[in-house]
Each structure stands twice: as structure tokens, then as C-alpha cells.
Length: 302
Image 1 (spheres, one colour):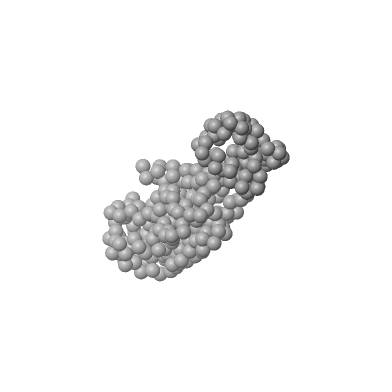
Image 2 (cartoon, rainbow, N blue to C red):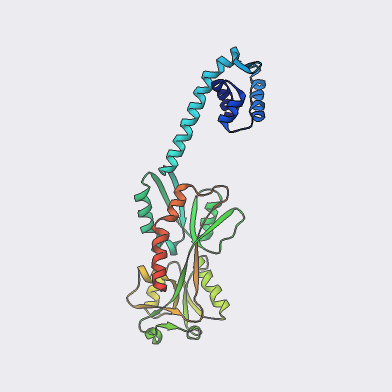
């Protein structure tokens, strides 16, 4: 027994005919009649007496009608409750975000999301991309915000925005007075970088390879704050996200663009293809987490 069969049965009983019931249910009359027949076979009882062009309920049909009407009323109530809950963002959302984004992008976006959707329970997990992907694939997370490339047959990806990478130098460096740098300026500079399991490190390595740069890596670290302090101490240069220079610049560090080739990273959202974003997830992507940072990056580029 299926809901649409009960819908058709009640429609026939209330309208008094198969043709009018089919119009009410927006289906063809043969389809509606076929489902009524299937329902009768399942119950082992005839539900209607067909007397020429008129029909009337059998004893079994009379017994079924109030029960079917009650079940349909409950079904509609359940549908409405679920719809209202989704519209009001009554749910749980587990979000994964990589450290180099979480530190500078997320606090404001998280606060804005909770302000607009206070009935959503938001859980945040900060980790490297590889670890977040594992949790996303096994359904421990609903969504991750990370840096491309992310490739997996079970995932769907949506680009959010591009963020430039800047060259961080100590204020005492000879190039600190320049407004921009050339690629040639970087050839013999010592490089400070994140560990290899960070996607930002992989992007910097790829950029250096593409531009035929062979920097001497003098240190790998777990976070950008340590890298900034090492740059300020004159231990080397580093490629850092523009958001770092915007939100947490170090007083003894300058941030410069490259002229010939501008490294950047693409920020994306990713989710399991069998669990597409709910309205709450889509709403999160529209909060200041993304939109405000887009505006800041655009203003910096203009």
C-alpha cells in the first residue's frame, strides 16, 4: 500500500468519479484506475461498486475511507513539519575547514550564520584537507571548505572564490621598499613553508615548479603564525594568503605581489554526492564567510 494509492482512493470517494479524481490528482484516468485496482488486489477487497457511470463505496471502501483520510492528514502534517524545519534551518550541520582558511575567514562567517539561523546546531572541525576528506566520505562531515584541487569520484565541488598569495618579507629586507617583486628576485631566497600535508604547501610547490623557481626551503611549519614570526626574524621569505595580510599582518613583515605571475589558491566547497547540500548548507555559503571575503579581495585587487 502506497501513499499515492490512498490519495487516488480518497479522491475518487470524495469526487464521486474516476474522471474527476484524475483531474484533481493531475494524473491520467487509466493510471489512477490502475493504482486503485492494485490497492484492491493488495487488500483483497473491492472498494467501489461500478454502476454504469456512477460509483459507490463498498463496505470495505466505507471502512477504509476514514482511515485513509486520517493517514493522509498525518502525512501532510509530516511533510509540512519537515518543510517548516528546513525553512527555519532546524538541523545539525558538521562543517570541516582547513586551518589556513579557518584562522582568517571563519570566525566572522560562523557568527553571522548562527545569528541568522540560531536553530541550526553548527559543529566545526578544523584539519588538513586529507583528513577532512576522509570524514566527508564516511559522512562524519556534511561539508568542507578547503583549497582546490580536490578530486574524488564521490564528491561534488563548488568554487567559491580565488585568493591571491603574497610574498612575505621582513621589513629589514632590501626588497621591502619595492611595491612589487619580480620572479628573478626570488631565485636565491630561503623559503619558509607549511608541512607537505597542507594544501597551501602543495600549491606553493606547484607554483615554484611551474615558474622554474628552486627556492631553498629552510623550514616547514604547522601554521602560518609561526611562519610569520620566522619571516619577521629574517629567516626567509614565504608565500602567504592575502587574507593573512588583511586580517593579521605582522608589524615586522611586508607583503608584496609578484609582477609576472601571480600565485593564487581556489577556495571551494565540497560535499558527498549522495548527501547534497541542504538549505542550511547553501545558506552558509551565502553568509559573510564567502561574500565579505570576496568584497575584501576585490577591493585589494582594484
